[in-house]
Length: 446
Image (tube, rainbow, N blue to C red; front, side, top):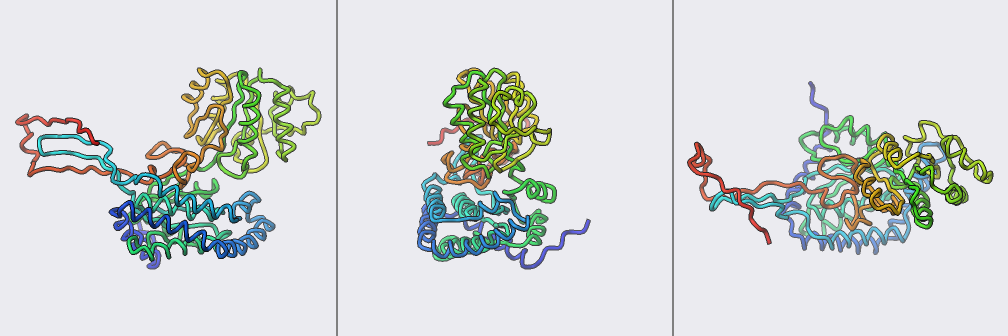
């Protein structure tokens, strides 16, 4: 098989990132924190320039929206404002306040006198992150990568290229001024051709994290020759049990959908126990409708709501249960039991986040143990599935896989571990043929 053709420019960029990662791997935590605080300061001081570049992007994003190249929700995610810039700065400071995830002793074992084995966390290395629309992702990911000691190559969408450039530029200027971390710890690529080259670099990259549409993630998963961490869809569910509290049902259901419909942790399907109050269900759906939500309901739900003519209900089809709308659309299904709800979630869900509203604590624990998802909640909005809200400082993405990291991925998902063995001239031969037994004693690490 012929090896893929990689341009010299891309090879050089990746090589520079690899060299930077080796410096970052041994960088003192205080130096990393200083960089993050300086970056927060730079963001605040350069907010006018950031907003000017973002306004240029918004002009193009609106054109792409009109031509059908960009969805309305994606167009909205391009927009930056003073509040978002301040949030980016706070993200940097929040990440700086977290403990250094690298260099932590995870396990220690005494194999013999003078022979001690330590499992120690360490950076992954060089990470490629591909994302769409949201330019604030540049800061979130870079902050987490720097704190964890990883070099990162960023690829954003063309709809936000001016914003991405100015933000990446501020990061690189901050790194250059630090005299401690290489400027190439963070770099940017802009074309699809560059991505097509990068995903084939099996030896040079250590991890790829795609954030964006189902099509983007599936393309990366299909073509990448290195591990991929991410999720294709965010088909999140709210299940209203027959023992659900009225106030909690309203709060959790409405917040899960309406707080920010255009993101992966917004709910897409509402499952309702057949014994849940029809009047309360109608009230919830009326409030959804008033907020502009299109309601797509199963036949049973349509039947139980026939006495509420003010509700404009559209018949749901099979495709609705497996669709991530990221829009003001909600599919609604009535179920006979909690078991039926879980069966539906495990069949149609994307293993992202699902929540149950109930006062039955035993049922809630069963639901959280049985639903196969990265996040399972009780009486709480699906919108809590977020790295910042989890106290991770920020997140590089959400993983719905079951290897290494799952759910919102923060610092802990950006480190792996290595084994360090400290000996004193030990050889394996002295333990052969039962000459000497290994101790395998646990070492208590303070």
